Image (cartoon, rainbow, N blue to C red; front, side, top):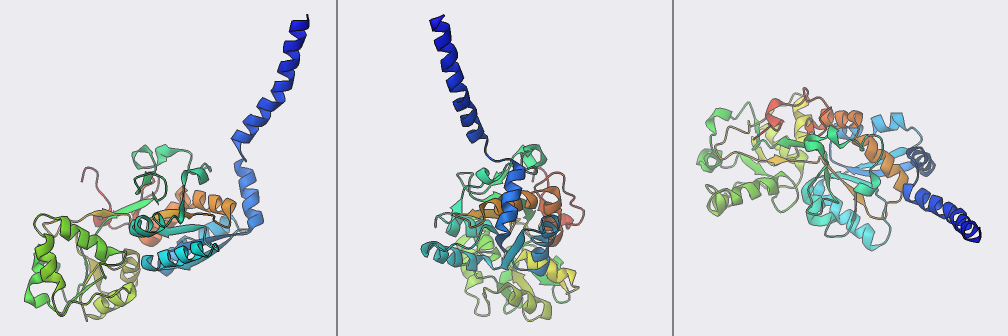
Length: 340
């Protein structure tokens, strides 16, 4: 009897400890996270340039969660790194979530230790079912599969052109841009900063039929202009000052096209050297020591929901990696094809 009594007593004493441990491992419920987010009252977001994407990243969430204010700042990719790294150095981080491209994430935010692991902030109702995503999984651009989550992608059009001044059929290869008739008519996004200028330069450098020789000839044209301002590039192209624009923000390009300006994407299959698939600005980074840890979880869950992804996809005009988000509003030439 003494042995049985002792065993019963031990079991009785251990039971509350096991229950408490299990409860600690379970963590807060989604309802508790939402309640805490509402008490925080705000989420601070850095997003890409463009009024339509700004609305897509704020209005739907704000309508669903009116108690959580979205404080959004629109910035070019090359401006984001300096801002966050300066704040990190001063221990005064004000940003929770960054919507940007892979270059900014991989070359600045991750090595600068400004990025926090993303998976721990997931687990809301819209991120639990991985079967909703292409390939049955979430896509990350970093080797650790931890810091830069990709939620949309598109086929990169080689360049943007003024349809009143350039005949797309006249260009069959990147090398055609070396023809003297195009000298003084090309504007290229500065390849030393994040964006399409860097992306295209990488393609040229690695392509066996282009490489250094092509780059040297193109980049040493005296009339070639290489600004960092995307709006300026598109304005040049729309007005015909430089009717061929290589590498401007595709989000802004789509916005300019939607306003009726005479700009077009060159069909990706036009040039024999081909092109590449990119996430553009369709990736997110969670900032280390974010000031609103619960609100950012609610925001990310909404952004990755069917509603949030549809709003983003319509504004950016790129396809979401969610399988249940329509693509009929995206130009067919920009939608990645299976097996290509």
